[in-house]
Length: 185
Image 1 (cartoon, rainbow, N blue to C red):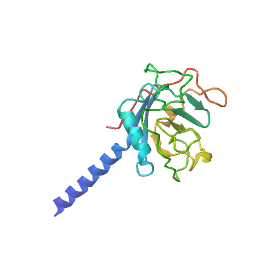
Image 2: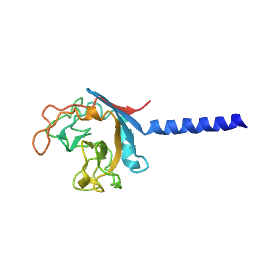
Image 3: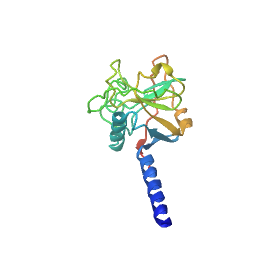
Image 4: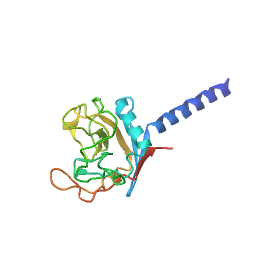
């Protein structure tokens, strides 16, 4: 009986560990690796989209085109913001997305605090596609207005090193890039 109990506990531990890794991504920057925890139970469609684009390598080489000190770092334009792609155009970065359809909003009570990972969109709440941002600080004005779908759990110091943009727009002239985003192994 004791052995059966130990086997059950072991299987539960393995299952929890696998589930955790399934929703943990590693964002590689030139400064270091950032561990992201995704909220599949809160924003399942945004998490699924993020995982699909990351797994396909669509984020590899994408610039942080809009970075505002004390606010957030925005990236994820896989159409115009990918420095490895023939469509790359820094002037248009932030206006494109993927070939997949836009997502419906998945607003929640998750607050936009330091390290929050959230979907970027236009004025239409249902226009999120591939772009996302990471908050540098508290941004309560975004709560229940943008779909938060994860957070930084390790490596926020590397997010803090991303080059800041100019003026209120935060456009970055020589932006940092995403080296890769992959599921944690």
